[in-house]
Amino acid sequence: MVREFSKPAGMKACVKIDLRKAYDTVNRDFPSHLMLAMGFDERWVARVRECICSPTFSVLIQGTPHGYFSSNRGLRQGDPLSPYLFTLVMEYFTCMMDTSVHSKRIVPLFRLVSPVVSHLIYANDLLVLLQPSMRGMRALSDIMEEFGRLSGLRLNREKSRVYFSSRCTQQEERAFALWLDRGELPVKYLGVPLTVNYAREQDCHSLVDFAQRRVEGWQAAGLSFGGRIELVRSVIAGITMFWFQSIQIPTATICKVEAICADFIWRGGMHAISWDQLCQPREEGGVGLRPLHTVRKAACVKVACRFIKGGRSGQNRWRTDT
Image 1: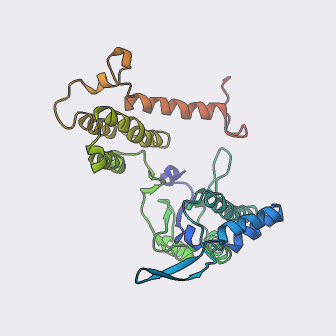
Image 2: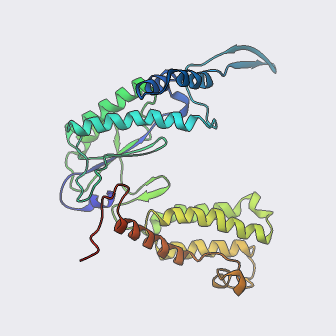
Image 3: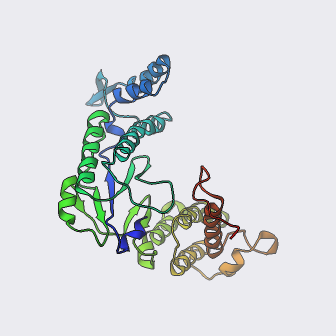
């Protein structure tokens, strides 16, 4: 969707929203009212409220705790219950967005395929995609203000940005309607660069930096040969697979990551066997690593199969009989 920002037709906008101290500022009364409105049993809601409102705090004065007091905001990070409650809170934001789309106050980006996407949410990472009319910008600003007033999750204007397509006019005025600064693409969302063009080598520097940091840490320095193999297989290959399923990574970036992995396995010394040999099955003299070039092809085939088979509800189905 962001790649279509370079097309000459239509005006498009992408708003990357950052919530200020997301878990720490949730109004604890809001999840309770929300669960009751969604039909949860009152006894269940009371038990959940008891779990999130039970902690008390004290202040250390010269090493001795004094006094205990409770709080009325925030969800404890690390609590298994907190992610579910935070998801319920963000569901209310989705309802507000869907209501505005249905009333045509906000117009999502036009797509030839369904479903129509007005926003994406992963935990507290929000991405809103809309046609940047002044009415739509003001409606989104009202939604964020109302959502913040009810839930306690306020917009962090210092870290939030709005991105416009190349053909969008009056960008300053439209950004001012949201009280946000304009940003320039590419930008990272969930660790992956969003760009109007296909990803280039300079857009994927963060992947190379991640691999380099993982192999240079003090914890990795004491690993055995088998431990280094497992770190490459689980950590570096895992994050690379996440990128493969999102964007097409350039060949030069793949070569750099593979070189970092090979040097790490042999501790920067002479390589006893080549990287291609390491990626062979164990019965053929390798260690069972998967070559990243092959993994990239497999990810592309997986995405193609998802398009051919259709989406979650049978939508976006291609005709394979023509």
